[in-house]
Image (cartoon, rainbow, N blue to C red; front, top):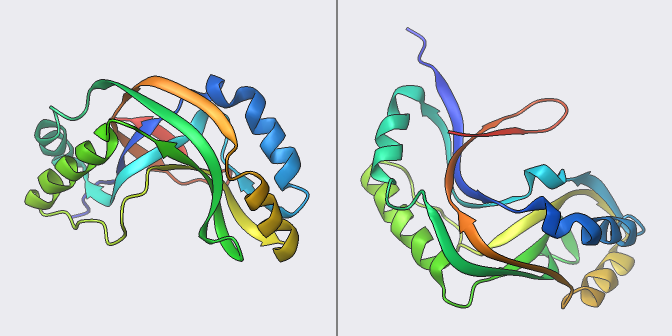
Length: 182
């Protein structure tokens, strides 16, 4: 018997309006030293935990377990500083750092990870660094790229005064991912 699965993660979508003017500027600057796939403005988000392919029948259990977390929060998120993972001299991802002074994002992520671990999901193996992926890098000019990242390390995009956490389905297509809030 084939069971239906959905590719899921827990995340927060970013107000694309916040990035509207700054995103074009970033693309123009970084396209001079690297290439790859920029995340569409309506798909900008950050991930608390990637759950992977999950049996559809488990979704109500997950939503119920996370009910206290999957809400809107009054907490300021500042998007500041452009960086590269794993490092500027060998980048795979260009991202903007999320600064959350009251640490709500970190505390909620820890709480959700405990809940998901209790529901037999594996904890993340990497340290949680709140960030929004902007570009998946395919090629780059090392010297120019490292200098560009250095030039943009204090670049400010703006603030979001509230954020919401959702359970999100990711459908992979040739044109890119399609995200749906569950």
